Image (cartoon, rainbow, N blue to C red):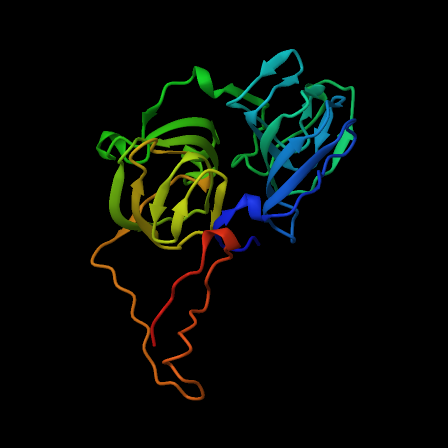
Length: 301
């Protein structure tokens, strides 16, 4: 399983050689979140040279979101804001990447493996771990620049103007108790706020692309990332006054908001073998956090 990560600034993380098989070129990656049990991962990848890979199929469900640069997948060109998703086992055409291209890359239910193949997609039986039904998965290609911002589909027009661009919603989700992955771009306009505390029955992860969003775990600036397992309470959001906040979101099901009001956190006890005046309390279960986001500030006794 993946650890709970809050307020990781990806600039604090070291670069690794990118986990690409069968490709020609040079690329590096930063690991934002990694599941060592099944190979699932969320990474930022920068292509240090032109890069290409012949057609074939991934061993995991794979998503790319382009933050800068250009890629060509088959005969389609995608620039900044472009997105594609390929389920495991489904043949994808050749990919060519421009030097300097910067992407977010996500894997689910598999490692970095890739097998070359010149067979047509129809020759593969593909389901893809992200697909909630037994129907074959499909190659999804989206230019988010051509999409209009829409109200938060999970809360309707009353959600204080929070806007979304759905890039992938598992087509089987409505018939499968709303399970199945969701990927979307999100925009909180300048000054947007939500004073509720919420938790969800699904995991939630996001990478901040621009602006600032302050909340109970810290402040999400550009390059900041979180991976939050299901049932973790969070909230009291305030977007920056100048640019608001923009980010890329992923979920493993429909986002149901369970709301807590009049919330409070109480930690009490008697010190046994330490001085509470000099040693602050330690709370079990604090999520992973990187250095530039600062200390937790958990003063108390």
